[in-house]
Image (tube, rainbow, N blue to C red):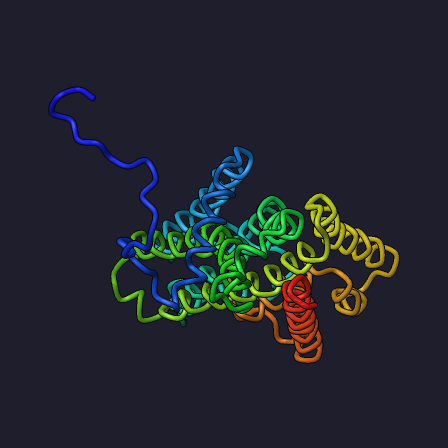
Length: 323
């Protein structure tokens, strides 16, 4: 042995004091969420989709800019100048916009901002949500079933609810990145373009409506996607089931409403399409849905999907541990 060196045993057996830092019990789910978010971020397609998901915000921002420019000169603004901002779903648009510079400009601004935000949630983000969840959710539980990772997870003091909460936080986090966050940015942009901070007094409820619309979107879709993932050990089967629900429901709704025209028939067949059911409840959150019976039916469908999906998910998560 060279001079000056100390011999160190190769096998130093025995108990040692733990030198690491233990996480708090309430934060166990966050460890699972962090791991899932980091693994999902490795997907190049997911990163591209997140970039694409922010592009529609620019289009909606143009609507905010055009409206505020026209509202700044109400004497020259014409209802026809704002017609391109609206669709046939809201026939009272022109009557509301007449309040520009006349009886109630604050109500007109609130109406336009609400409609632009609902448009953002309903069309571009509604479609992108299906794609993003279809990339993230299918392998979350399916891979644990295939690799028997439950043996590792539940060998520790981890409850089923904490495991499911951690997995759901992965999907929820990415959904908030493409819906809630850009919608709040659009609201702040509207405040910057408005004539003064007094606009906050007339639009203070819009951030709350954004959060409400986000809950309507996130809760049933996350529960359904994780339920599909828990039913199989092959993530491709979960992906197929996820996209089939959205595509088949959309196609069935379009075919039935095209063959049976009429607003009553459209409302009747809304429930067979999860996309249109979500859109109806979100329209109510933003103040555009007034038909109570159809709204209650749509809400009941979303609640039923959430409850059934959670029951399936809890049962499937606990099944590997039952003897």
